[in-house]
Length: 124
Image (cartoon, rainbow, N blue to C red; front, side):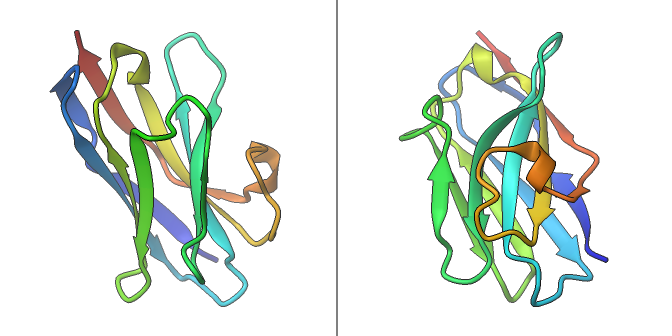
């Protein structure tokens, strides 16, 4: 079973850039895509974006379109979330999650394996 480990979080200033990484170990051919989710203090976890392992197809929440970009390195079994022009509202714990479903979308219930999360704090 795949295991996911996020890294790259930290404290940045509004307007800065940050790249999060998600390393997948034990990945199989059934693992279809990786999603990024975030959970701000006092709020429910919400979808940020996702990328497929094969083809690198991506889709994003409207709130991050044009600012965040997901990419992957299949040789390294890593997925990245490039966060540009970060805002204070982006402060959250960011999780990556794996799905075997082809149309998992933004519903976290469709993602079966989760990392432990990495904290991002954006100071205004």
